[in-house]
Length: 603
Ligand code: SER
Image 1 (cartoon, rainbow, N blue to C red):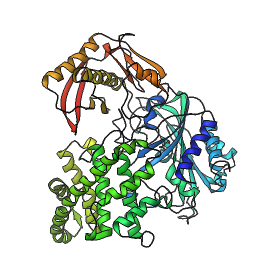
Image 2 (tube, rainbow, N blue to C red):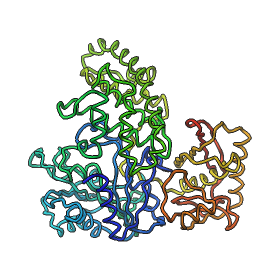
Image 3 (cartoon, protein in one colour):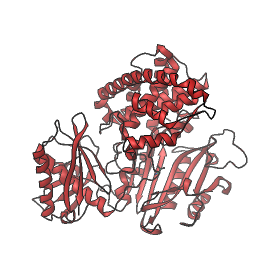
Image 4 (tube, protein in one colour):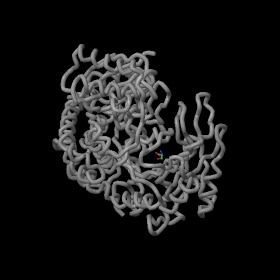
């Protein structure tokens, strides 16, 4: 079965069981400061999991592109990827554990669908702790379907829980489905969920049944939701009896392109294979990020930093394989092959093909210059470093390489590792923190279950963002389109297309216009309507975004004389009067042709 067939089967299975199909969204999450990328299918659905109505209904199905870089070090093994596709079915207050698990089981094992032998499945469920009891309910459903007790493993929150780590919000136990790869187990204690390589996780059913309140207590939710996620690449691997994701249709052409570009052969040597896999994964991920509707370019902060790191790591492994004979450009020909594979499910990539090529070539070139300088510097430092009896390189020195030569810490770490040295990472982080706002720069801030904050102040910033967006269009013109939005409890940040810095006068006019709407105490209302109707009525939509046929439109102002109408999942305040005073703190460049505004609400 190919990945395209799996995608189609999954969607059809759930359509037949009363689900509506919804579109996957951008890789760059909107209004979620807890993550740099969309890390799970549930991210774009957070407002609905928090209680908003979804215009498409209560039972939903889709596929979503996701990026996770938290375990980037593991990429290169058989199954870990930075970019992966997630299939998901959702229940917003309709069905719960029994139905969700039964459907998962049927889809996995029925010969009509995936036909995986039931005896190859292993299950994990939540073991229970002081916050919430053991999830016996899920275990009982699995047993009723014929999964024997010895293939059900009970694990703690770290493994079988999804939801806010520190903050408040909906959360709950999850039940994960594993496939027995047939590899040797690590011993008698090896059970489903073990990471030795025997058990491969393919699907996760999350049951949002609690709300973690501000006192840290877990209260039962009235509207319980189901969020599930199946990894396409891994599932295709096991369905085709392959050893790794790289041998499936998802990767086979990309791997061949890497072999060609680096004059190497896959399948003969472990070290070479690892480098080929890393390049394949990283270029596929860089391609999908650069091909996204929301333009991210390589940089030293946030998502741009992750992208830079993926590209640079791929170049370095390319050089490892091909040595000095490495061709230029190395990466963009591989990316072209990735585009061919990805453009079916993600057609937005087609119009961004030249950006993908240009940005990859530019970054590769820049990095080659950096590499030559940085490696040279490192070699100069090496004799002294090797004299250190503890074989530790100081974090300050590593930071100097980063700061002076743009040499990424991960590469310094790799080079150091190759010479039997480790780096004082803590010291490096400290130097780095001093150097820039680390909170958004690290790139690895993948929080499991990063449910966005839905506090009152964040909701106010959402509404203020709509006012700002419209005010910018009034003052600067209709070419202004939202390129990104990021809200925390302290401020809003809004990126938009505009070719020149705003003048002081323009900033003032925008600010005044927003404050005028706040002063008018305008009502905020929501209506679900046909996409076409919404657009015909002038509702602002995100250019290039895929929408469902029915959408939610938030209007600010009295009916017939709205100040703004915008397609949005919500939530919003009920009246602009509650927002306080709106103040623009900064207007600056974000990337070519894109400006960025930071603003606060003063109450
Ligand atoms: N949110 C869960 C996961 O990512 C299920 O979709 O695994």
